[in-house]
Length: 257
Image (spheres, rainbow, N blue to C red):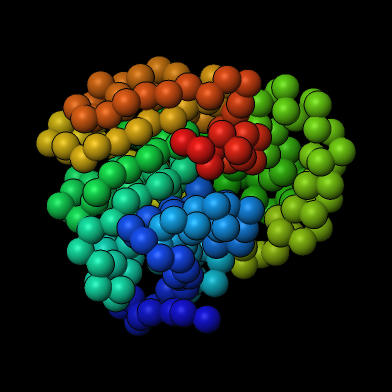
């Protein structure tokens, strides 16, 4: 399994396919296995690179508090490790935020970006949602009920009850009851508290596709519209009947975009 060293910490990545390099950046609860159904289509004509940020998946756990700036440097170190001068970035949610922060600091290393369900800031409203997540982090079922229903559209959640029940059983029993995972989730959530690029994005000229969902309660339409205004070289598409977890609700459309 491929790892590289980042300031004494082990970082996990996967590298597959041939063509222009595309790096997929995880949402906050995700890790490289989360992309399983997308690996084949995404690598069929590209060099596909997956990455676990610090506190995710098989990468090292942190102990001290940090901000998303450290994840930006993890990404830069990965490109240096692979000898890649320029890549395209595809990020969803937390991963999209890291991509945006990377573009502010290293836009010369980006060909294009595709940002799904991504905000340019952690608003006071979103920060309070994160605090609610963290307050329930010691109760597996409470954490599930606080975090998971809100990331799906009501339509998907109600119509796919069997899928969601299976998801609840798996997450409550095997994931949200894992103290190591939950401590990492608290740190990851806190790492985004100060995220705000409103003043910084005016200098970013990277060609960008912003993809929103019409029932995304974490990064709502107003935040997405503002991101479109801030990124001068961007286009904005809206996925109908989908929530924050657009990759799972509309996988074919997600892949196509």
